[in-house]
Image (cartoon, rainbow, N blue to C red; front, side, top):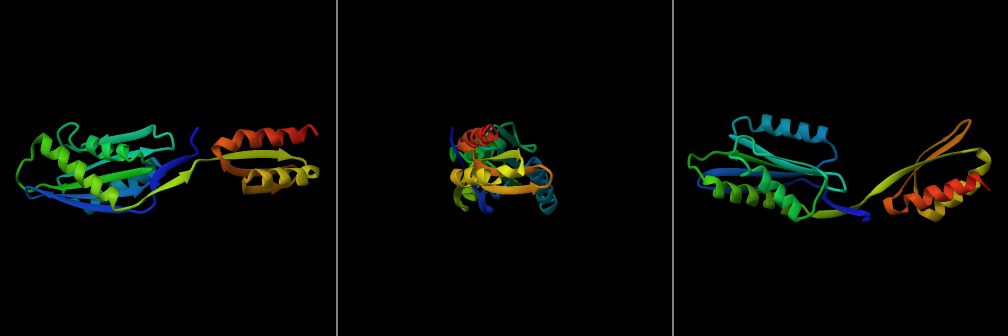
Length: 194
């Protein structure tokens, strides 16, 4: 189980021109479908006079949530080449939008694929890739008398405290690297039986 994934943390831009058609590309770090929808709506509004606003995205550390959209271009000539650039760099939590202003000359399917692929690559290459840790939240409830023991386990496991609630029953939420989450749960459970 890998504890890291690759993404971007800044917006990258690229411009590609072919036979008077202009392709404006934008790579964004994203964390949700709602964020993607907002960005797409903004690009459609900002480039209301553009012929096509094509895109692809990838979400989640396992890279299982993705989509490619041709926005009226011939099937698989825009979204797939954009997604291909995301995949070739093994990125996730990324949206790449390519806006096309038609220049009056048809590029053909091969020309479109090259243009969208190149524009997407330029945008992605103009922002550095970063590695991020995949973390999991562990929640544990315990009586107040166990506080010292719980805090010792937290410190020894390098977990980060997300939130605490010390009312009637104490509850602590911890963030820890995914591969160590089960070990932390087991250590905390053992405290209950001491």
